[in-house]
Image (tube, helix red, strand yellow):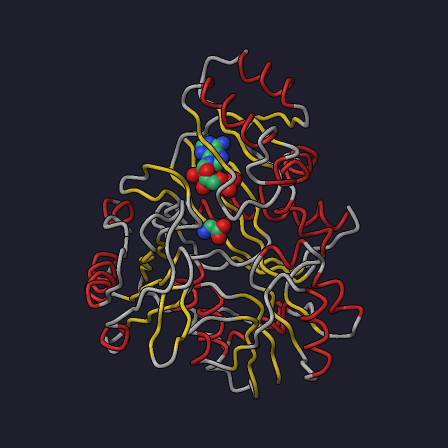
Length: 423
Ligand code: AMP
Ligand code: GLY
């Protein structure tokens, strides 16, 4: 089967790496891909947000299945265009993608179907938001309602800071039109976990749990990023908690989407805060998490293409997911300065030495090939991922691999997985 994978991050390299092992795959294209995906298939120079061009490419090349990695083309309606062209697609349509692309919509739907989430209010006028925030004397969380590459959420322990942020988002337009509406919500306390589930419109299959590290700094300090590392499974997610999240979050949201007339198909990601009072939803994403996908797919034993086809065909009940019981840890190596400004084009060395280690895969994110060299080409550059008998062993191996890789200004957190190890 000829497959087109859309995207260029670490998540897409992990998906491409796993698809390349499938017996059903005859040809894999990745648009636009990175230096890592080029080893798994053929990169095509079409950006992930050029949705008409992607449809043209799929038609011209007789692609049978398109897998959409990132949220931007999903929110722009790529899945709908492909479906109208008669091409199978993994990922929800534009209306269903609003679960991620419009946090106000997600909040209202959660309320309507009684899913536990932080108490909050939605604003489309700065003056109203300012008055509301000023009336509060405890911490607030300010969220741009639209897509902001994981950087649109601010936890403000002092409400006065919340007003400044709200002004930057709504008046100074730091996220453009994505900040026309904001959500102001209560700060939740607890530990986070990422729950990813496959949804075929009817059936919901949870993948193994994982945990991201959103903040740039050790000890979860500093601004939020797309994610600085992840591990799977997350010990905080017991079987009992997983069942509760499935029953109280995933089932009602998928039902709610069905009743809205926008059935959900693809992978649904629930960002959960495990509070003393139980699990609360922080956000939904309508795609695989990045970097959670890297450790999750290293542990999945199934043929990923078969699994994805089962989702597309509404036949998830035909498959059973099998997992490597060993934990996996992914450490993200980023460009110095990220998530603020950073430079590109730095040569990366040591990739082969790291990749030669047993049970280690170096997933590329912001990389590209320049002549015979591989150079940095984004904020998050690599996701160095290792399996180990224990989570400590996986961590140790991942960092051993990280230490073999060098580029100018490389930055990584040194405490990935420590929370799991302490458990
Ligand atoms: P989101 O994109 O909505 O998941 O938010 C990004 C990150 O901000 C989350 O992973 C949390 O670390 C943090 N966050 C979001 N909402 C809240 C909240 N209500 N309370 C505390 N932290 C939050
Ligand atoms: N790792 C967080 C995300 O994919 O949004």
